[in-house]
Length: 167
Figure 1: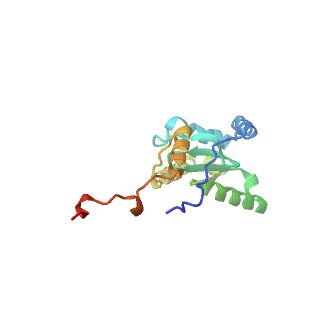
Figure 2 (figure 1 turned 90 degrees about the horizontal axis):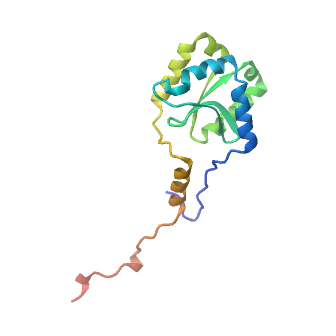
């Protein structure tokens, strides 16, 4: 159980204007593999699940995210295969997974050469993940705030003696 003395951290839903602009730019400059994958994921085409593209998650922008299943799909170009990039990608994945998402990665070549296999892998991941209810940001904020407020409960010292105790 949570320690009542520790304040409950409030999640941050704020996306900075610069991060929002960057996500918008990434949507405009998507790779061929990202465009192909978006054509397969948009409009709930994959098993009825809604995906968003170029989604800010913490300080990062994920290629595709299904919030209902907390699944992130990353499409990697050739720049992701150097030692430095692999270390950066590992830190990025750890940060996204710390927010409750599962990250699956595919190379541009996999998407272009084996689209059906990639889609099957994503469908398998979707089936394996529990459905998480997606609340509006306002409702989620309200839920977190309600959970953080102390609740009034009766303690032994404040309970009134029952009438059965009298002789």
